[in-house]
Image (cartoon, rainbow over all chains, first blue to last red; front, side, top):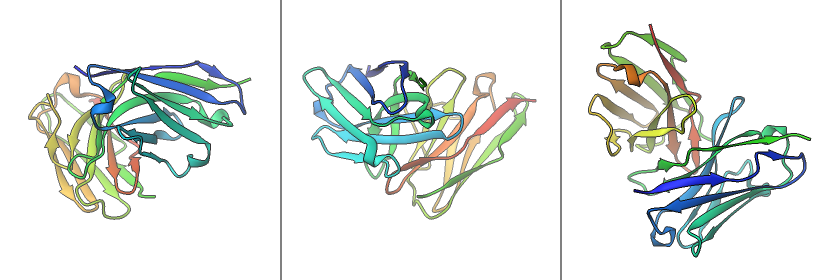
Length: 121
Length: 106
């Protein structure tokens, strides 16, 4: 059974960098699929952030691209997100998920429980 | 960016009734349309992918249809555990989500 678990600081100061980790169990991420991040805020609803595949290929939401970095650590079976220069608009629940990014699927089929991140001084 | 518009915003139904939720895309997404269910305090759960395919473990009362710009999620006979918020999502050049339809108890 594949499970994902997000971790990271619950509070980040404005202009700083938000760093999150998603630990995957039940499946070696080096074996396949894309793995991604989605966030949810009251103001903007659900918003896809970025995804990375088992070969290290990445793609980013163009509206956040300049501030984003996604990476993978296959030895720890986890992947990470960094979002720089955060503002209050980045306050949200952040989810990680398995991204079935193929033409016949194109959806996130497994999600973590989510972690709340607040940007405030 | 492809914008997804869901209607209605809120749907009030009694258990056993049929639910019909709509999702309209600002341009064609082919069949790259998925539906999710979200309950308070929980992550979204995938119901339907590629417009009409039920995800693993999803009951047969949930069905999806449509292609191009107009899509529908139908719950044939709504159960008490189905009252939740439903989102559509497309994958064209990148993922975007609709704003959600809340299905509430009448």
